[in-house]
Image 1 (cartoon, rainbow, N blue to C red):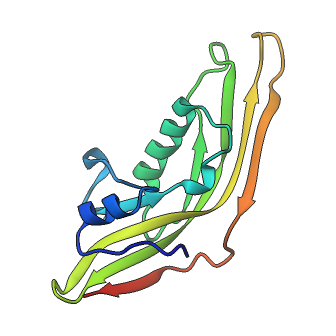
Image 2: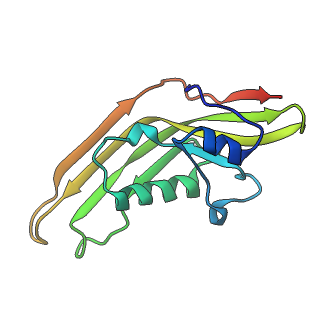
Length: 150
């Protein structure tokens, strides 16, 4: 696990750790509140901003403490799309508890394994060709971690 600067609120932790981003309010529910995500494993992998936003939204929509694997794919139809990606992401959750508040403060979901293939085609009549493959792992143990802060 990375050495994050763990503070007593989500906002302070976000400011202290630039690689983290917060779940959007639209995707929050009673089981997924105060989630923070770390997708820094995808940095410098030559992914377009549009594809990266699709990946982030899929993670916020599907990822929970119980389901740590997310399948991602580009939303497209075969007649209009010339770029396509599909794959899976594996996350390692870290639950941060506060002794002072006596409750869970937030959960950090760190991306630890990536298997994504990006494909492209020039014409409707051409087959897709692989333009980018990402297969990277930084941890093999996907068990959750519990940490306490004062």
